[in-house]
Picture 1 (cartoon, each protein chain N blue to C red):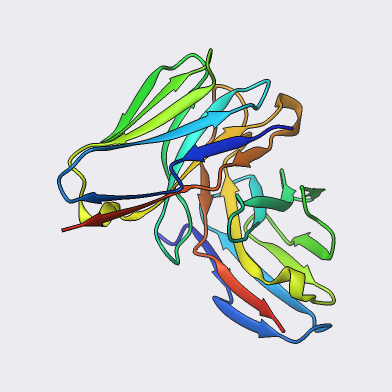
Picture 2: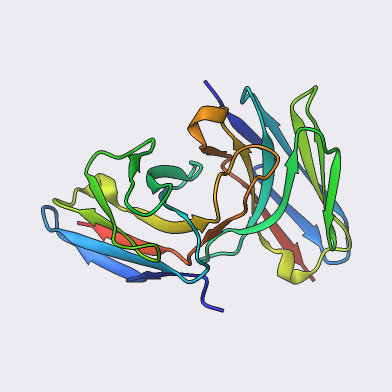
Length: 117
Length: 113
């Protein structure tokens, strides 16, 4: 089972370049997320999409844009990469709400290592 | 500020031994708490999810406990295996109307033969 698939796995960018991280899930989940993970810090939410056609900002949205292309796909774009965006990026998905007694499981992709020089 | 703090930061144990990882949180209101395992170079994988009304939940050799009164959780690993070497991340659901997760920085566990 593929689960959550993200590409590319590794990427090196020069400051000012743009790129798009692609993500797709095959679990028919409604909600999708983009997180970044930096050393010594917990995962931080960049953007999320609660359902197809909607997107919302997370904790650290500056410098990023997202597109929920359809129910399966959720892409993250860096318009003008900066060294501060060097990080590991994780795409994730869940069937629905993360809150409450239902507490839907969130499934993560394998990560994309991005270095901006 | 809502926070999730884990201890210890790192831990080394011998194969076959038990260990307990700690998580303290200040998130309020709280609705559920999760433990994730993250192998080096991989994405986090869910181990357990507990709501505020649950005290314990097991997943094989992993047992999570929750004390919502003291805002503490622990993850107990029994009869450790080399494959348990990973980071273990405590995650708490944030205020209800935001549907956000707040992640701890993790405990790095190394199991040696």
